[in-house]
Image (cartoon, rainbow over all chains, first blue to last red; front, side, top):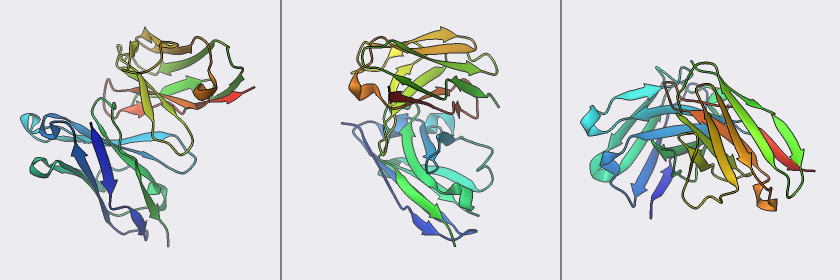
Length: 116
Length: 107
């Protein structure tokens, strides 16, 4: 059974940093591109970014709203995906989901609140 | 960036109704489009991928069509569990972009 479990969320002040993790199981994690999607309270879904697999040099893509502030990485030996979030803004407050490239499996989501 | 415009933004319908939601892309995206259903407080669920392919386990009353810039999600006979918010997503180019959502409510 495919499972994706996010962790690392919480309350952070504007300008601060936070790192989210996503633990994957039930599939060959190293073969898959992985994505992050977020949803601000009461708002729609927003694609955040993607990391490709080793065969594609772990290259990344980002939404304009997070480019230069967020970094997606992965550790295939630990079946783990990460989202390093720096220079956080109040508008980054959202539930963050990790998902496979095909958007067929999603984690349960983790809340990040940016507030003073 | 490709803009995805869903219509309507909200609608009300009755159990048994046939419902169609439209998603228009600002550029040609071939058939690189997916549809998702999200209920309050829950994780989005993929319904359709490649514009018209049904995700495993999704009831056959859901169908998708379209190519290029115009796409539709059709629910042939609404069931009580179908009242939710629906989103389209283009994955033809980066950044991937979602439609703003269509909230389907009970009439």
